[in-house]
Length: 432
Image 1: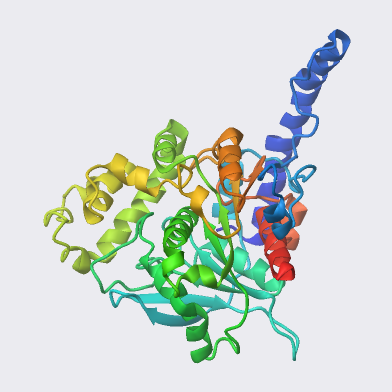
Image 2: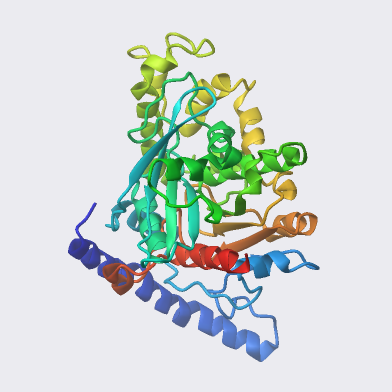
């Protein structure tokens, strides 16, 4: 992690050399001549008039969910530079120095007796007033409340008057694993446990973290956390009519950031040469360390081969996320093969259509890790089937990067995707 001044210097150089100069050259040498020729010929333009525009998809006939989130269907512009996806991800998510949130931990018990660690970052509110609400945050793959992008979101959310509760994925960060069950994209039991009968809020009140359990609650999932959140919302939506304790009764809205085409497509995207070199190794190393850190529990799992974690064993030689999924996730969760797991984890093929609460899904077109979000045609089919779904496609942002210009970053301005998420969250609260 670079110091703020060092990051500013590197950012200025990158801004000029990798953004301003190439963009000006492209406009002068390519876009302007082609546009002038097309105007003379009366042909349709090859380039968009405004490449900062966001793409918004909602139900054609019922715009209530769009109004619920305070989103306009046309004319929304991305408020930051359109850096390339790799620059956004490497500088924005990995090198940027972000403000640190202050957490208070509340521990509740999962259905299998494993501790669930909830880290609360509280908004500062004036005496006699209360926070706008609570944002439950589900981090991405290999992340926890200690991850820089989670700190960044918590600080921005607190600034807007929202308490932030990060549900640490079991075993990630400094959290323990005592039961023979680790995480995956289809493991929703811990989310279900903390939302059942409002346990998330009542436990915080009992621990003296919150004064009231009546605050409106919204859920925000980042990357894999968004997949887990969506799978949970799908499962609860299917059974909620017969379950009075369903967590859907207290969750006002769901916000899924960094939605991919599907698990299988994302895994293939990660095998590209640049992705293998820049991201695959780091992701795989984190997963290997995760399993070895909880070795005592893993060795108690009857479905996992006893020699998997042995010195020189197959786990030590795992070099891709796909290999990790095949060796560990597939047998651990009872799937026949990796493809079956990816099919079960994917949320854009038949699950979003059933989500029973308003949900906004956000994806960046230049995401270098999970790839671009599904085509707008698929989103249109989903939105026509389920009016609760709104999709916002951002023209830039990378994977959890969303880098501002050098002065924005130096001054600590709110991140671009956070502006959108928190705008929606504020509007949800004002609608209720």
